[in-house]
Image 1 (cartoon, rainbow over the protein chains, first blue to last red):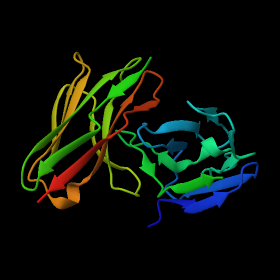
Image 2: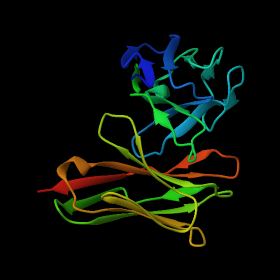
Image 3: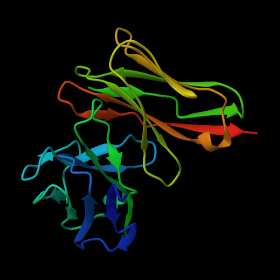
Image 4: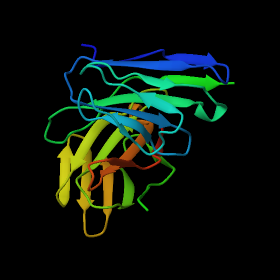
Length: 113
Length: 109
């Protein structure tokens, strides 16, 4: 049972570098999300995808891009990382349950120096 | 603007009962969620309320009053493993989740 898998678990990179965080789910959920979590703040939505082939901007999309070529994969790319993007990133998905609750990956801790 | 308020930190004793409150102001309402997040781990789903009243699930219960914009999570018979952050989230009229900053619950023996 995998659920949602994120990679890498942790990464340190220099400012200005390009970075892609990978997210794969095996639950055949239509909706997927990328959040960042910073100390003292609630989870903030970066981008989302309601179904394969579509994406949308969340609360804090600047500096990030996503793609959804298929149902399972939802990578998040930082084109040119900046120190303010130091955070823990969570990928999540939701299916057609009564509640529509989110299932989260284990997170990717990113440090930009 | 949309806002979710919950206490930053609470302390309780093993075996006791604790109530974590959440108040919200959102554009519309399509359900309220509680998640548990242990340090360094992913949030996991605890409960969902869409109608007023109490939902009980084992040692955990969640209450909702839509007219007051208020919910609480009640944890009974506290165990050390309940030490975690508890996140309140509201789904708004656009079906987007608005998250509170979380309440860190510390359980003491």
